[in-house]
Image (cartoon, rainbow, N blue to C red; front, top):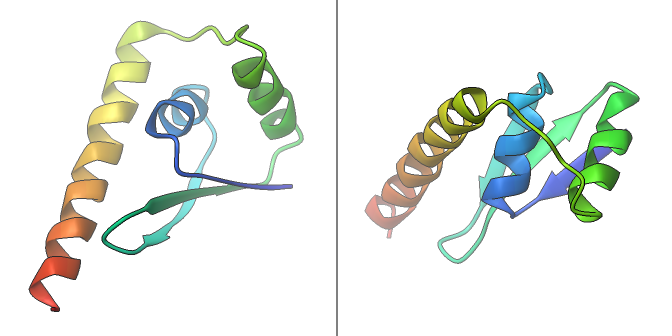
Length: 82
C-alpha cells in the first residue's frame, strides 16, 4: 500500500505510529509526503480520516518537527534553484 499526503498532521501521525517515510516531493506550492508498506498504514489512515486517531503526544511532536525540517529544507532548496 502507498499513501501520499500533503497534510502535515496526517504525515506526523503516521510517523508517530512507526510508519516509514519513503519520499518527500513537490514544488514551491505543495509538498507531498509518501508512505509505503505495512498493512497497518490503511488502518491508520482510516482512523485519521474518521477522527479516531490516537498518538503519543511526544512522538507526534517529534515527528512533526522532523517533517517541518524536511519541508523547510525542500522549500529553501527550491527557492535557491529559481
